[in-house]
Length: 393
Image 1 (cartoon, rainbow, N blue to C red):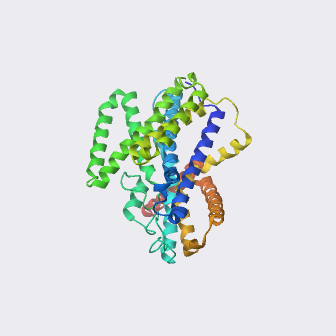
Image 2 (cartoon, rainbow, N blue to C red; image 1 turned 135 degrees about the vertical axis):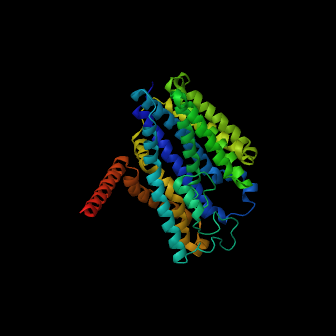
Image 3 (cartoon, one colour; image 1 turned 90 degrees about the vertical axis):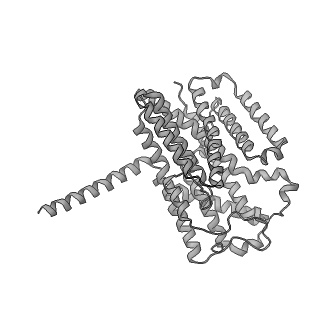
């Protein structure tokens, strides 16, 4: 089995951070700048509407990268252990996804509670006089959506924290991936895995009882195809077929697809499904290009790659943080000029990175989280034992 080199991991980390930055730029544009543009701006300047779609491209890269890395790491574990360990798989996914997610939810709840409690701008409406667009009508705390996000239940998410909508999809794909591996690797579990999959699909279908949920259901399977691009790419990489084409060919293919997308931008942006697939293909070609780079990364790229250590946390908290900054600015935003928006962007970007870095040092440190859980568990066990002894006495 071919292993990823430190050089390749560094380049992938660079892409992970830069794509998170792309999502951040897109959301900054939606929250602060898009509201100042004329309603017909994107009709007459269709190319600039790409700024509105930047977050979607960044997320598609994350989906392909997620499918690639989860497949690669799982195949690597199977090779090392000689079998598929469901316990190891679940433990890795839970320690990776849940602690940062739960902290981000608490962070978001605190922000929106603060906005409402102090009656900041956005507690009633985010619409300013003359606005042509607003990314959120107002700051809300929807209990059902927060519950969905907390337990990663597929459903309508994203209204509370715009960056969280993708996690429920991704977690669902992790479950499907595990079921597929159980089915393939252990014949005695085949029937059980099929039954589990059927029950899951029936359950997911039953909770979608209106048109909105049907559209979400369709979106899940559409995004699954993009995620499977990464799964397929990992399988091709492991059997060493990626390097059979040079990086020049992958770069030419990337430029060709990007050229077609740019030339037919009206067609693709008016069809979300086609846009999703094109972004997925671009993401796949981009990762293929990275996997075939033979030169060592520069010091600048190595510095950027360090940002990947807290990219997940940055992705989770940047949206509510931007809304909080918007609430603090309020009507002062009406006085802003281009220089003000640039300075504000740099300030929010630095602040988001600073906060994410310090939060991630705790919540994305798996060993620390494990030790905390063990310590809390041991303290709880001692408390229960002492109470039992007191009752016996």
